[in-house]
Structure formats: C-alpha cells, structure tokens
Image 1 (cartoon, rainbow, N blue to C red):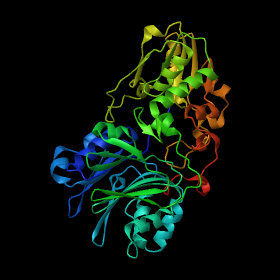
Image 2: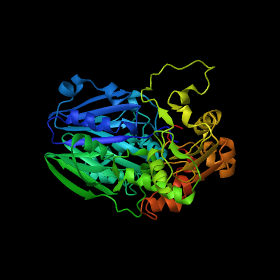
Image 3: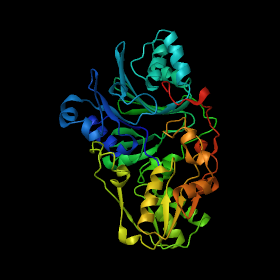
Image 4: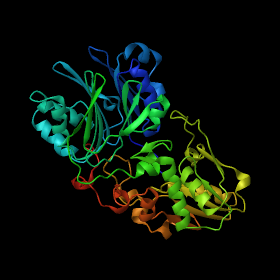
Length: 461
C-alpha cells in the first residue's frame, strides 16, 4: 500500500471565472498531492498568484477567487514533492517575469538529468530560487526566448529534458500544455462552453461538467490563445511508456487515464488475480480505500461474498493531535478499524493494490489474528515492487522495498499470512488490454529513460 502521491495540474483558457474553475479542478484532484497548492491567473495586464502549504480548501479563500485572482486564463498545481523540499518557495506554479512577459510553469513528474542541467545553468550564471527541477525548465526557456518564439523556445527546452514531465506553461494570456515523448504522466484536454481546459485527470472535468476531448499525445504541445487551439509536435516518441501505477493506484477510479477507464481496469486486475490465485474462503475484503475496486473484481470472479470488514475513518486530517509514545500503532488504528463480529473464525481473502514496505499491512494482519481470524490470504493486484522509481513516484530506495530483498514465502511469514500472491506482469497487462506500452520499471528494473548515475532521484538528495 502506498502512502504518497505526486502532483496534479489544471489549466483553463477563456472562462470568466478562471480562478474558481481552477480551484474546483484542483479540489477534484486533491488525492494527487496534499503538501501545497497554487493558482496563477492572467488579468489582462499581469499574472496574479496565490500559493500556500496544505490542502486546496485551506490555501484559497473566497476573496482570492472573487477579487485577487482575476482573469479569464488560469492554471493551478497541487504538489507532493518528489524533487525539492516541502517548503512554500517550492510550491507551484513557479512564476517569473521576462522582459514584457509574465511566465509561470507547473510540472508533474521528475527529471533524471536534473543535476547535469542545473550544474550547466549555474556555470553559465543562472541563479536559482528553489530546489525544484521545475525551475530548470524556466531557465532553459529563457536561454532561447529572445531569439525565437515562445513555442520554439519551449520545444528547444523540452528536447533537453530527460524523464517524466507533463507541463503547464503560461505566458501572459497564452496557456500551453505538453507531455514528455515517453508519455509517463497523464494530461488531458477538455472543453466547458467556449473555454478549453487541461487537467491531469478527467475527474476534474466531471466536477466542472466539462467535455473530455482527448489526451495530449506524448511529445505534443498544445497552445491555447484567444479561444484558438494549436497543436505542435516538439519531439517524436521512440517508445511510449505511460506509468502503470496511474491505473493501479494513483488516479481516481472515476477518471479516464491513458484512454483507460480506471475503475474497470482495477476490477479487471482483481478478476485476473482471482483466476491466478483462487482461495477457498468465507469472504473477500479490502483495506479501504486501497484495493477496494480490485477486491470487487476478485469477489465477482471468485463468487465469494464481498465484505467491508474494515471501516475507514474519513475525518482524520493532517493536523490530528499525535498520541503519546506508549500508544503503539495508533496512526494505523485511527484510520482503519475492523468490524470485530465479522472476523472471528473466518477464512478471509484480503485484496490490496500494492505492497511497498509491508509494515502497515503487517500491523493490520496482526489485529485480524488477535480478533480470531482462522485464515488470512493476501492477494495483491500488482506485481512485486522491486525497484525504485525515478520518474516521480515516491517509492522507497531499493533497500526498503520488501519485495526487493525477500521472497514471497518470506514476506508471507513476516506478515503472518496463510498465503500471499502478487498479480503477474502478464496478468496485469492483460487486465489493461496492453502488452508492452506501459512503464514497468518498478517491477522489472528496465528503465525507459536511464536513471541518473548513482541512482539519486533528486538534485538535493
């Protein structure tokens, strides 16, 4: 089970309430990052911004949306840091002024050549305000902007980037969206009335009643200005490698990502898992909210009842008062609590979407054992995570990944399980009706873009 997400992007052009629409777009994608949030708008003369640490609803007030963030063009960002510390100065969108243009950039993903590019830029006199790799993009654009159009400068800059990047870029009233040529991170295009919208996930469109048009293609840049949209190809992809974890875990189940229905994809993973590793048991249960939709698929395929034998407390916030030291495992218990009457003497199949370190699941299994569970069988709807990610997912180092250092049998003993099965790679690909187009580096260690030397995921690590 994963604990941290990455980032979400939203942009809109040609709407009288651009800031408010951006607010709700970010609100719909809050699951993608909870550390900071920001919105930038163009009011006809200058860019306006509001950024802050915390959740979308905490950062923005009515006065921001109705008075301060004026304009018909806006873009926003919610962040979980994969590069750069969790500080206000690292909150995005990142905004600067270049000659007569206000410029802002927001980034989802992680570059693998950050150290190399930053060193080169600093040697040439560039001064950095943040520790984000996103700021590198701005410096690269500025290098050629005086001699070329903005679109050409963006294309030249992005051809130097290696790794994962979906970007939103604002230059006065011009809104630009693009995806890296490998297509690691999602970015989709929609329309609400006469306004174009860009978002990391289609669930943002649903809240605004916007029409989903299509995905931005890998290596494509779309430029929206004065109600018109132009598409450019800044780089031809050699091989697309969208992140499979969008479908396994990250995206909201009501989204369409990479052209796939997330809800149906997760159910399909559960059905495949039931065929690969059936169990004679009393019922199937998830640890909500992870694993819920795969558990539904497992139950439907196996014919076993589906039960919510663990209840989630949805009102545990970031500011929850921490307990004293002697209250062990309180952080786990405060989020989930079992329905005790359902556990005693039962043979239970637990379906999870992923296992990283295994410590949280071990604690929960221990509680089920204490309540008298007769058998506990864990089924995981993705393959074992054995390798770190360098493209924007906060997976642990290889030394902390339980599947990288222990066999399935050892992990089952460590968690006190009667059996453990991970979905096979072939089963995962069959579930999403694809064979080789996704990035599987965290399972297989084959990286579409070579990671940096030394394996560092950040310029400051």
